[in-house]
Length: 141
Image 1 (cartoon, one colour):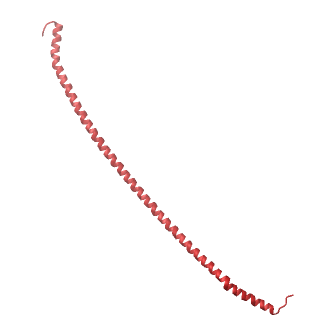
Image 2 (spheres, one colour; image 1 turned 90 degrees about the vertical axis):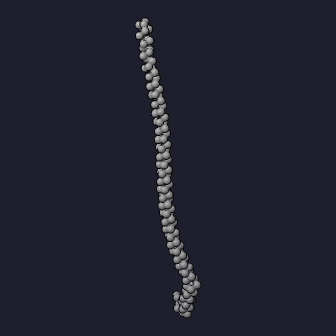
């Protein structure tokens, strides 16, 4: 059986002193360390979310600048392409005008040659007709 004597009181006092000492030496510092660690982790989580937010904003800025630069490059390319097309059209028109002028000059020269040949043939035609008639008829006209 259990007897209640002074050792029971000493054991109870011993347990209370041990709990007080353990609380002071072990449990309180461990709780403080865990509390500090928790606060540190919470702070790191907040920093991480802030960094992620900043990274997202910077990525959006970069994307916007890339889109703007792409638009400018496309506009410059279209402008250069239209200028090249206009210059090509102008050169083509000048070459065509020169070719038309040369063609008209040659046609005019050819018409003049045809007309002069026609006149000379027309002038010679009367003589030729008279000579042929003379030969056919056997007498001069």
